[in-house]
Every structure is written in structure tokens, then in C-alpha cells.
Length: 245
Image 1 (cartoon, helix red, strand yellow):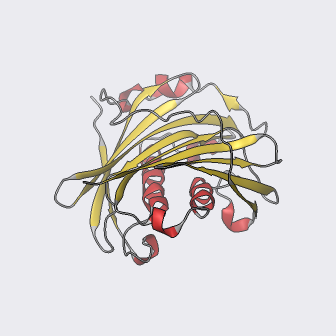
Image 2 (image 1 turned 120 degrees about the vertical axis):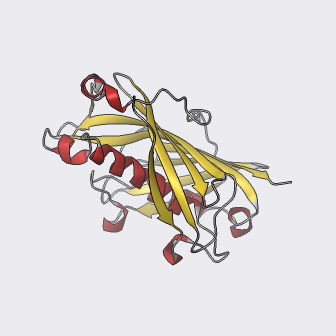
Image 3 (image 1 turned 45 degrees about the horizontal axis):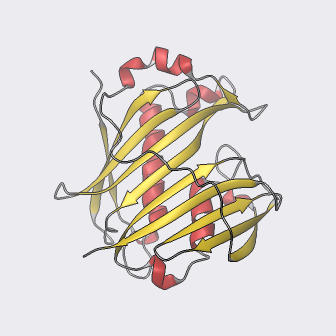
């Protein structure tokens, strides 16, 4: 029977903001790096898929962080796949500190695309060939929530440049998150609060595009929408804060 995999990380200086605590984007990067490492180790990473002109792409993600760890502290990311479908695969994560206390969790849903057509392909074969990679443990929190409508009260534009692009030649997930969070007041981003991020990818954004980034602020949350053509949503997200008592 498959078991969870564990990967060790440290909060380095490039991972923190001026509060000397890890940023949401840096923790998200660790989560996605873990996904890549684990897929590679189990024989279905992008190296294998690229040989067939395919690749993994993130479709939806939910991250919950109860507290942001301090600079130079160690933490562990556990990951496991709970299911494969024809279109999406669900990969889960928990984050624990050096004392073994869980301070974060995530649920991600992945699709496979053809790199020529950029369209989704049936990934049922991965489930058949790698059924032994599925761990019979449910996701550690709610699956990613859909954000159906955003009415921006703040907007900015961002031209997609070289440093925004990942190995799939579209905008890196964490760059989207940074673009969105940069619209918010610093006080909101650095408050001592638990945070949940939900993000849903609808279309690819590519090098040279000018993106419109919109934010709708609410009392304890913010909704975001990014468009590559000014009309059609490419990415929607929500961030919700819960002050600690």
C-alpha cells in the first residue's frame, strides 16, 4: 500500500517578508516543488510526460496556512495522491514544523495537456499504470472552491515578461499570486491571521500579454480576477483571513 511522502524545507531569507516570516507565495512554492519532486520520484514527472509531448498543469489549488513560520526554521511537507480521474488528479499536502505541529495544508487538482494543442488529454492511463501511488487518505481540507464572479474595485495591468514564465511557457502560479496580493494593503498581508487561498485557472497567460489584474476587497476576504484580453477571466482566486484568538 502506498504511503505519504515527506520532504524537508527551511525558511531562507529569500522566503520571508519584512516581518521575517515566510510569505504565502514562498510556502506555495514549496508545496508545488514537492508535487514535482514526488511525481519525478514515482516515475510520472514532467520529464517522462515531455517525452510524449505532454505535461502537468495545475488546474485548481487551495492552501490554508494557520501561521507563517519564521526565518531559518525547518518544516516538512507531506504529500499524497488521493485519486485519479479522467480529467483531474488530486494531490494533497500537510505542512508541519520541527515539533511535529501541523500549521498548513493544501489540496491541488492537476490536468495533463498536449504541449502542441495546449488542450487537456485523458490521464486515465496514469491512474492505471500508477495505481500503487494512490494513498487511501482523504484530502486534509475542503477541495478548491470555485469563484464565480468578481466585481473589481481595484485594478492594475501587468505585462508578462521572461521572469514570469515557467517550464510550460505560461505564467508561473506564484507569479499570479504575487500579482494579486500586491494590490492589497501591506497591513492586511502581514496581519497575524490564518489564511486560506483558493485559485482556479481557466486559461493560459503567455509571454508578451498584458494582463488586467482586478481585486474586490471585502471585510475579511478579497476576490481576484486576472484577464489576458480584458474580457475573459484567465484566473480567479479568493483569499480569506481568520484572525487568531
